[in-house]
Length: 152
Image (tube, rainbow, N blue to C red):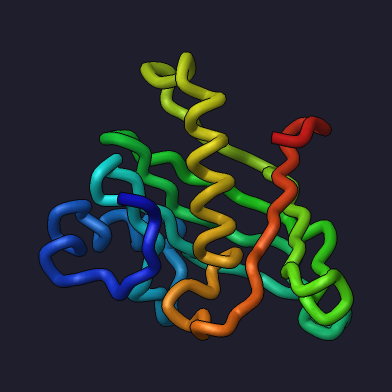
């Protein structure tokens, strides 16, 4: 099985204790009820919260993401460096994201390259958080993921 975009069921909400995860930043307001999940690998990914620059026509400044990788919760924060719509990029939606912070637990540090590969795939399948709102005729998504100056 591969990553799919879906609405989070009540069973999954409880299984992964998303209520506790939701409260970690003490933010009021709505939270997404969708995610990108690979059930076979036990990996899921979702946009948690984002802030935009209202002075800069809503350009995204910082996005918080929840990434659950095979039993370990890995919160991360990204900045959108560049976006190119499909109409200006040969039918491919392109996004360059810079990881500002990622908290990989010590016990899985040795799997970093696999974690980054799965994370990049989740970003692409979700089309950087669009998820269940992707239309059938939506163009493919290509992600450049950068961390500490290096592309992943």
